[in-house]
Length: 484
Image (cartoon, rainbow, N blue to C red; front, side):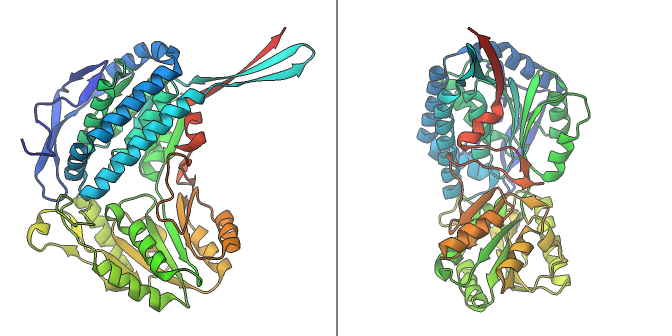
């Protein structure tokens, strides 16, 4: 068996500490080469019920465990992920297509999120207040209960780890369902939790090629208290409107349409580097990737020239090859969507300064590769101006007025991330406050850290992950009044 593959005999379902097979299985193929990377189990309704049974059975013991013990298990899992990061990164690279360096960085950031959750889990106590007249009040924090964690394919390690770690740190048990395209890295990560001492039934894993029916089955169970979901806005809204009469805690991290604004006093070299990193990381398949670039008129031509030089230097190819910076799109439908968006923009009068085509030369023809693309003259009515671009395509717009660019940046149903590049601190503060987005990067293309809350406004989400706010979503608040 070659490095970065998973044995076809390995089970990918973990229920009550037991690795088991489903009745059906399905192949996982590399988006870069089309080769089979491994085989995953296609869990059904019986598997879902068994996983909730296991989580319910383990719930009381796990929530009663001293926070210090839960923290120690999470820290041990994070250490194992760091120790095995090279092996795990190769698997992540082959399964998702992202460059090996990005895969390793994602695993290390995921391990950091687990460590943060381990520490925050020790600080979930409530408070004591005086009510006067011999009365005292206590505010208790207790785990919500069984959590269903649904993670995406674009960051299948870090998103998976952040959800699972926060739930477990709060004292919840979990049933985790990774994306159907990337189940193998989830299996490998859950294995690290098991070897770190996570008790049977506390963390259960269900892989499936039929996510909609499986998630519906899980959420229909009245014992499930919370859903933590990362995915498209369309699916998130559907889950929010389940209509089954069961009220559950819901955290949704959904789509984005991130603007980046380059002001006239920006450091052009630094801004180009920031935009390049934000846009083309993971082949643009990121909910916080720059989707709309607004450049001040006074810098437009100079900035575009520097941007084109930088884009020309990007190496595209399989993520396992040295020096590759842009890998493939996840699958054929994703590639076709990008092609349709670009064709629509060109049909509305846009001009491709570079790229604009599928890459099929040599070995690239075996995968789903698209050339890094920069467009100008994109009409506001074009699809690229109105909807999320999950690919390596960057439309560039110009502006002259701060009020106008803020209005255009905010003119979207999405509100996940936005970026500002400039040097006037007072203006940066003013604009950051007026941008209707949950995450703002000021001269920073990666405004993410375990210490910061992550989530969106408007149709980009509900609730937050990370930071002091992250663990609150997994806790119930109970008031107790005492007359002493």
